[in-house]
Length: 535
Image (tube, rainbow, N blue to C red; front, side):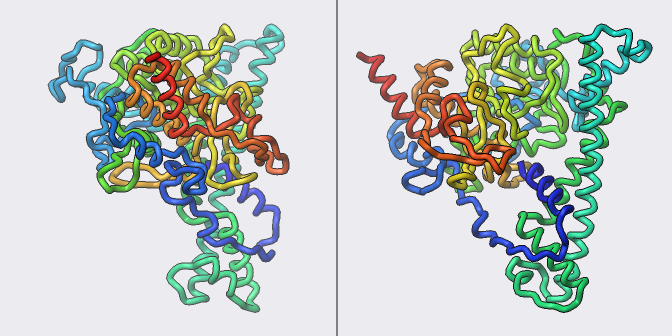
């Protein structure tokens, strides 16, 4: 994600002279082509998934409705580009305060909110799972001498304690660094605008400016660095807010918002809690995900989703912070029991203290023939070697047959083809999909380009929905097989290894398929399935 890149850029800045000359690149060289993720590699010379090309060959065909559950931060159900694209529980009478369909959830017209309270309030921020685990162990062992603990328990506690203290300190440092950088950015920008007598600066303005004044030259060097690294006011403010949340909530041992929900949190079998407000206080992430899958393709508004005949079941279970296993499991159960054929899960974390209950829910979805698409994560890590939850691998080490793990690719070519932030893994990641500068819906009739494996997962979920719509006889495992078997392979392409810009690796070694999802190739393969079944 951009924050990871910004953090690196600001860290480098701290090590160089403000007056050093840097040649800023122009915006045009770093702008993703419009609608790029829907475009075709051959026709448009960008590695999209060929959505537009696919619909040309499906023009005379009629698709069936497919329901995709988006387990996320919430979905803006009022968004102009999602109208007619939302799942509606036809068995529920809106607003009557009665559980008409007797599914345990009152007035669940558009879905359910597992991190809401019975009085209509919400969990917006939550702690990280690392913080919760450290708090649990700290309380458990507070009256015990660490030397008296069994060796394995002591080692685990010390590991968690060290990780927490390191991460908490890093978040505090990054918050201070972003705040400092933003302050100097604002000062330099205002000084340069006044010196050049312009309302807003461009890279060209800064490059051409000449002065013998040392203060002005320092400001010039600062702004050159900002342009070079794509830094602007909004991104810096986003960075400040991200790390403020981490300090104030994510790594705060005293913070516990669970009282808002009002459930018995220790009862992991409890299912019926929350409220029916599927939008919540911050639905930016979930609304963006929903738009990638389902934004209306025919209304001439902001963007086009991958799938045409689709409806989004909105399930809110992901706060600003780490989601909780109990909520994830219940969200999966809700999606399956209410008719979702595909579940998109664009979230993840490094610890899962109740992994068993999530496994049970995934196994339930597997038994019911529901496909799960999951984002691989944005830590630039090989998740063959590090933990990333939820996971397609059950505790018994066997994989779920209904799961696709997705890494993020970029619109850029050659060595920059893989997103710098994307997790990867020859065994753990199945495919890659567009996940950089993906333009989609955001709350209050907004549209925005965001980056993350969170965007790559719904691209893949959209292709799965397209296949299920036009080939309704296919089951979840067949759709998964088609998507994985029809990837576009970029033979011989060497890319920068995520998180290791000085190391190149064959793209084929970053996932089990070694390829990028493609709707056109998937439909071609689905046609062959259809023909073979007729024989």
